[in-house]
Image (cartoon, rainbow, N blue to C red; front, side, top):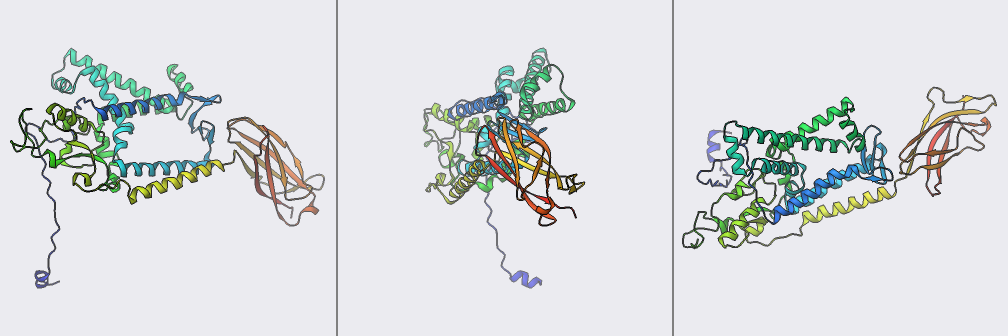
Length: 477
């Protein structure tokens, strides 16, 4: 393109929206390397979060100890390659069920995010739960946020040494408890505890526990918001699920601006001020160190701490609550909010369909599995009776939690002879390996390769469980 053509061509200017970041006097802009001293705040959302965290942690800590029918109720046994969920045992053959569960969980997360924003991060994410538990240890040992900040700025002394030592000891012990509990989901919990306290663990188990202990200690004790801001992928793609009707923690700028301090008895309208007194409490209580007054930011985990802090200030000033609240962009703009919308309907429909398919998969799941392994060395042979004989190894997998007795048979060829046990007892969640052979008069065989069907039936306890598995019977050439 020539220079003259460039001059004649109209240039389209992309509109740019400038956002002014308000910075109160004496408050430095947060840097990623700065330590955040989270100030304690009370209120409805913090009580809700604490109770949800307590239920979540109790569920996590107690679940590996629960017993069902004489075995651990929830156990993802990697060594035996089986997952136990109360009365349901999943094997590698059932990985489609786990895939359904993961997909269902993902779409449930999408649905919640589109409706309520990043509430998973603020109320149920393990990183958030454990971070607040570690902060609780800090508050009990070192004091409030201002006291902790003052203590860190002081030179080393006996007071600082014993407080820091006690805090980190509590962190490490709690991290060790977390690691042992986590490992208890993948190995028998009672055996893990006994082995750890008797120093009888294997090197592999000890290494895993040590790794997760220091991972918990580092994530919840030191990295904290760094995990949320820079390492969590959910923080990056969550904006793709947001829209203008998504409920997020928001600052009502129309009501709050202009900001500025004032006395309780002073009329803000006469001073030309909004309801925000610029106290900066919303920043001090934020676990990720952001200022929600600067607008929606991906660092916000929707925990509602700033909402409770601001509501407390509004109560003291005798103003109406809700300067910072859970709101949608349309609500802040004075437009109609559409809680029921296409995106949510789509997610809900997918969830309903997937839930139905998962239930059908579980209902139609056979409680027994039969694998047939042929003798690879010799497809067929002639025995001393002149019959043609094929050798098989049957692997019977009892997917239930009870000991069952099964009867085995074969069909597809007339007058077959079964050599081996035909009635076997298989322990609950166990595998029984049965070597057998089938022989038949060669005159009954129509071709070199003949179709046969192995049949397994449960006879004790009496049940209508019946499974058929096709295989091949080879004639001698």
